[in-house]
Amino acid sequence: MNHISRLMSLARSIGFAVVLLIVLLTINLVLNPARFQPGSWGALIGLAAPLVGAAIASTPVILAGRGGIDISVGPLMGFVNAMLIQVLFLKAGIASPLLVVPAALLVGGLVGAANGFLATIVRIQPIVATLGTYLILTGVTLTILPAPIGPAPAWLKALAGPWSMLPLAAIFLGWWQVRRLPYYDQLMAVGSDDRAAYTAGVDVTRVRFIAYVMTGILGGCAGLMLTALIGSADPNIGPTYTLIAIAAVALGGVSLAGGRGGVAGAAIGAIDIFLLQSVLTTFNVSTFVLQIAYGAILVLAVMLTAMQERLAMRGR
Amino acid sequence: MADRASDFRGLIVHDLVIAPGASPIAKRIAPGEIVGLAGLDGHGQEPFLKMLAGLDPPLGGSIALDLPAGPRQITGFRKAVSSGIAYLPRDRRASGIFPTQSVLDNFAISTLARDTRLGLISPAARRARYESYREKLSIVAPRPDAPITTLSGGNQQKVLLARALALQPAILLLNDPTRGVDVATRHVLYDVFRGLAGDGMALVILSSEIEEILLLCHRVLVFRENEVAAEIAGEEMNTETVIAAMFGRAA
Image: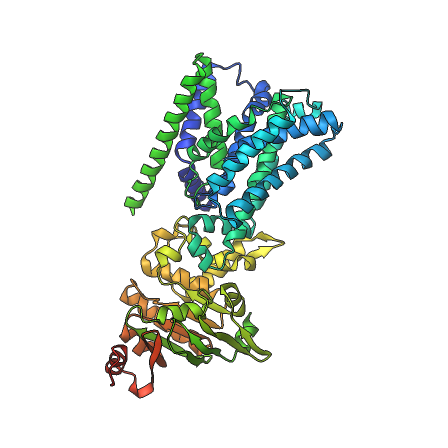
């Protein structure tokens, strides 16, 4: 009974995204059975992973509410990509995963802390603060890496192939632990109503700051997955993930007002977008049409979620 | 926490100024006492209560907890909470409940650290803690994991009261606690308040209803123009005297 009700509430919070997932998965399986064979799952997941990672990374600050958003996730992924290949691997000759992975997370965490400092302590509006970081990171990335360069260490490329589940599994395991921390309840409370959270004794600024740091660390992780996928360094790919990741988060039922939704929803939203991309490219549709489709689906999803909520309110 | 409540010998309000130019207020609130705050809307009773809670900084004077080790100054909200002062806000929709969260999460938010095992939250411990308050306050909720917005206003208020009581405070500050609450629930709350005072807790209740104050409180501070115009207790405490003080007339 308890488990069923929990599943129900999970389905309600993700709702439309799950339905879309099933529909798109079916269409993909019918249209393109070869691509979705178990044998190619590794590569397929590796292909979807950077977007899933970017969507998950965007989630904590959005959950923290009051306009919390981090649009610098995409450029951060590009920056991490450039740092790992150009600076660590090619210049310093460091290839060990024991150094590269912590370096990626550290870079992410530091950028997240900078965003958090600007947005929660200096109190610049999050979208403006992270727009600043967006521009700075894009510029710095192009300065250290004016043109694409390769290759990447072999173990890293394997993370987009046979081992592509590993980084995503690590993220989900990590988040599952976060969910069991007192911090998670505080995060959701702050996102739900920050004044009430303050009166309940929650340190709102600290909770929001940590959310930015988490977004940064997860963004570093997404950068790692991006590097694994492209097997090289490219200064221009990272920033393209920013807006599509936020679209995935919204599609996954995470309220941009905060306090509603979660990482699972964001991941499902990202997979939806990936599958949509896959369907449309089977039909050889141009990338412009692809953009139109993303936009239409996003607006539709947010509308349906709002209607569903209104119906639920009327139901009682 | 429990020992703190028993050690506490009262709340000392020392020459507190709540508005520019108003004369200072000096009061002492003893354990086991229920003190009412009355007055026409906007005459200073709400700033007074918020200053006791550490939410607003005083314009002058100080607030301290009388402890055996010496007075402990209340300099801010966090200090107040850690010293054993709990505050129940007035507008539960705007600054009380978390509408997107469950009843259980709404209850536990102030006392998250109590349910942790090795740093991780134990849902069973939290549920058990909630159950004890649910019984004490007779909260009517379908399930603890139901959204708080599915509860009636009175039950939402009880969950907020449970949240404050879970802090095991020595002093409970209530800002119009029965506003928008049905009569049956009101009487449950009154019994709870009396029970808490009987256990040695000090309660300060701001109420917009004089009947409520007359029914519950041992004494009432009537505010007028940001000063305590009258302090009425015992036999003299009735509707006429309180209203007269509210309007600044001699009774």
